Image (cartoon, rainbow, N blue to C red; front, side):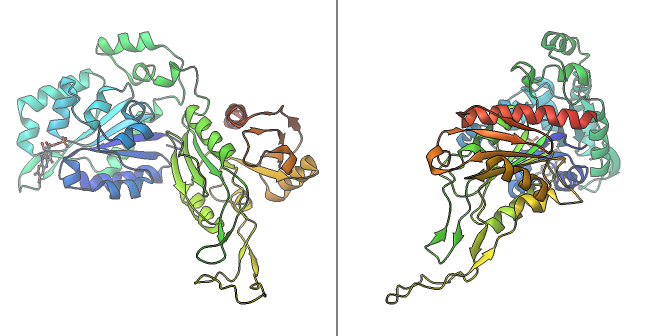
Length: 438
Ligand SMILES: Cc1cc2nc3c(=O)[nH]c(=O)nc-3n(C[C@H](O)[C@H](O)[C@H](O)COP(=O)(O)O)c2cc1C
């Protein structure tokens, strides 16, 4: 399930606790998981637990302004390869079968054309009730896939069908479902709609309704992209720090462009005065050591782009209290080497992202230094730029970059940082595709 994105809807049943294990199992298979919890589900498990296990904030509220500005219910309904509903309560099944949309989960389930797998779980009498069986038949007719329920002892000391399938069975069913779904599809919206209304909504037909097709291509769809951005701050004492002039504009623009290209993006950002890009999971850090930890926690990734201007050194003797002036003698500042984040990740033998991109900010011999950096750090591509004060690149709106690989150098004209980001993302899409086909 490498690189596949699952939207997991957790319903308000006693089996919701098993969904936490399901998140773990899906991630073990290298799928990424984003969760929606119904109001009922939150009586059994917390959004905090689901968010911590999935590594992405869990969503709960249709009318949450922050959520809506961040990803929005329509994007939630689109930005995945499949939706798994586990546990699927009798109530959720009924809402899905009737087309109700009165909370985030049901609205997303109605607003999607993605393949859906449900794992029903309920009391045996609820399961056997003609209403539930009618809803089940409708859902099957609508092309929705079902795993379980199993026979077994129920929480209420009853025995029979209604027990949710085990997380491993659900993960297997999700993997099977995704094996039928290609990573990218050709736009054929009308065909998909027709197939669905005729009750023959195969996974392929449902996929053809996918949103990116309307928007003219998603070169990074299905890929996980990790971007670092901004400077790092290395404290001298509680109020002073070592920093650099990076604004984060280029890294943030790349994260936004990768999200717009359909990728699932994690942005690890040092301290910047920029808003978090929409549709991107942003992790804010301060120091180089925190940035490395956040980057490692965000792996696996298919593409890693290290655009942050990480401080090479930190103070070896950070003071616990504000340093006092103490006459005319400055305090002795000792420096220690910071971890080299790019080299650390690019040298990994286990879990190295297939495409590692570094940035080289140079003030002289830009291309030559970039070549040396490419070899030393073992990355696949260096984006080199001249950051001499005269260029105004650091903190500015524009950038002039050279793309340096082991055999080639390509110099791009001076462009807005957003344009550089879009061009770079398009190029990375081509490289990822070439890698996948080789
Ligand atoms: C302790 C408890 C356990 C429940 N377990 C289930 C269950 O396993 N399956 C189910 O369909 N409903 C179950 N319910 C009822 C649902 O929580 C209720 O129908 C709720 O409206 C479901 O909301 P949701 O489908 O939006 O999550 C349970 C309720 C309680 C109080």
